[in-house]
Image 1: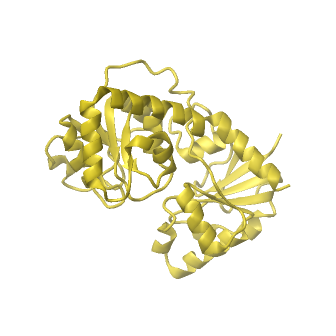
Image 2: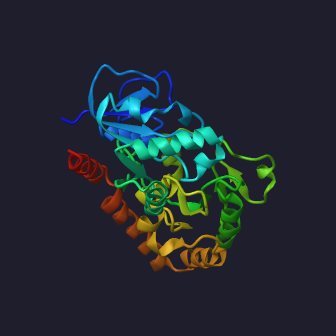
Length: 311
C-alpha cells in the first residue's frame, strides 16, 4: 500500500483524519481518502513516504522547504491553497521562497484548469496537474428529503467572496435570501433588506443546512477549491457561478457565466424560477456530474495513477 503524508500549517496535530470528522474541509477530505498522515511544516517524520504533499499557506509558507521535505518522501508535490495570486500579497522574500518551492517540487497540484495554466507559465514546470476538490460523504449520506425553498448566496460582502453581486442577482428570485457567516463578514451586512445570516457552522452542520435551499448563487471572483458549487452539486441544488471554477463549470454547465456578466446571471436566475423543466435539468445534471467528476473513487484512482507515473 502506498504511504502518503501531508504537510500543512496546522501545528500540533499529527496523524490521520477520521471519515467522520465534523469539519471535513477539502484538505481533510484529501488526507482522509488517501489514508495519509499529517504533519506540520517543520515536523520531522521517522517514516519514509512514497508521496509527500505540501499544502501552501497564506501566512506560513515561509516555513516550507521542499528540499528538506524531499528527505521524507520519494515524490514531493506542492498543493495550491487559495487563489493562484494570493502569494503576491506577502513580502518579497516569501514570494521568492514560494516560487522556488514550486520549481523544486516534483509535481505542482492546482485547483482548476485555469490555475494549472498559470502555474505552468509562471514556473515552466514540466508536471503541473489539477487535484480535484473532494467530499467525504460518510457523515451526510443519509440526509432526509426536504421541501426546499429560498436562496443561499455563497459568501459575505467583500471583494474576496463577491457577496454583494450574489445578493443583487438573488433578488431576481423573489425568495428569502440567506448568507453564511464567515471570517470576512463585514459590519453592517445585517442591515441589508431580506438578508438572513446563518450562524457559524462546522462542515457537517453546513451541508445539512444547505440541503434546505432551492437555489444557490456564488459570484466569487476569487477562484480556489470551489467547495460551495461542489456541495450544491452533491445535493442537486442549481448554483449560478463563474466558469473559471472547475466545480462550477463541470457540475453546473448551464449556470456557469463569465466574470462580471451579472446580466446573464439574472437571466439564469429568472429562468430557474419560471421554468421547472430547466430547474430539474440543472439539478439532475449537477448530481450526475458530481459523480462523474468528483467522486471519491475517481479521486483516489486518479491520484494513484499520477503518482505511479513518477516511478
